[in-house]
Length: 369
Ligand code: NAD
Ligand code: AHE
Ligand code: ZN
Image 1 (tube, rainbow, N blue to C red):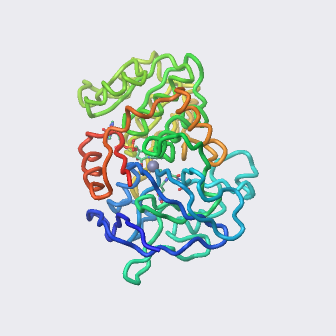
Image 2: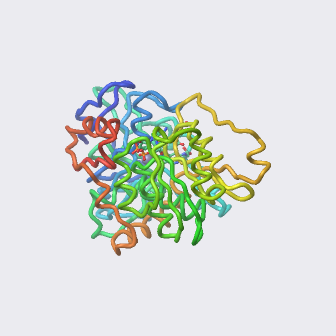
Image 3: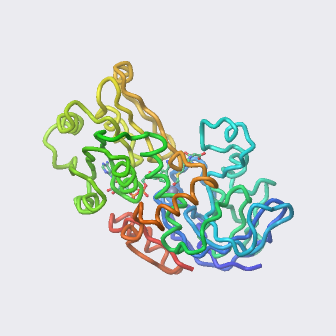
């Protein structure tokens, strides 16, 4: 079949809207009609040539929502007509990681996913006879995509696609990092570095958990209003702080925060986030994705004196189990999504979405097919 898609033929070049050939789903796979997809900073980072796993030409996008149109042999977990969110972190419920109960990082298909192909080692997308790579097992910048059945979460039919697609990455990543990974407790003081599409959702999660102070840190002053809208109590722009930002934050939080979160992907900020934690017990959670070759460092003394450095992927959420519940939270008003969808675009306007992201003018741009 044919599908309209935004293709990244090369790094650092605008996406091109073309008609691709798409093979029908094989055994264990499903064909999904993507109704809407968000643009996450991780897509921009891969398009920018900064991803150590980045390969081209590729159909990017990993924050979608849509409808199952066809299933391959042996698929019983979903059927045509089901509304679904594709999962870049699948949940096979059979691999060592799933069975451990200790992680959401299912390993069933991670190796082929990182190589841009389906679990059988081949791609379903092609253009003029040339194979096009899948991305993060999702490729939601295509109107139709093929994904393994373990990589879709079935969601309720009444959730709007253009808002619930954000649960496919940003919402779950942010809210889940605060609740599942950090386990923020009532009365905790929290510092969030980077108030973008992820950081604002960490804010929502921290507020839901009953945090006391919630300090937002961002170089962009326009993020202060956004933070206040979602429960932030204090805003700090590091470029306007006289002296050391860490000392400033430690003083502001009476000795350091119980929890800090990096939502920037900047390794200098990651160090600041760790060192702004309270001596003896503060926990810093890295969410941001750093460019290939970057490393983090600190004085080991920071850890010896009780600070903990950890990371969180997809908010520690198990996709097929937790994503439908987060959709319920949204539909029942427990979490907010609508105000964060700042721009709704057509597929032809997708490059404008990346421009808005880089200019700091959007929280989430969503393409509606
Ligand atoms: P975004 O562009 O919407 O937001 C980033 C924010 O950080 C912006 O508000 C920007 O002004 C701010 N910022 C940048 N540099 C800063 C600095 N030095 N100090 C303070 N603030 C700074 O991006 P996003 O979609 O929110 O993604 C944030 C990060 O999270 C990215 O690195 C992305 O790749 C990563 N991410 C990780 C996961 C995961 O599962 N771990 C999931 C989604 C996104
Ligand atoms: N390909 C990158 C890794 C990027 C990364 O860490 N991705 C996050 C999700 S970001 C979503 O916006 C993730 O889930 N990581 C776990 C995993 O298995 O990829 C690199 O550095 O090679
Ligand atoms: Zn993402």
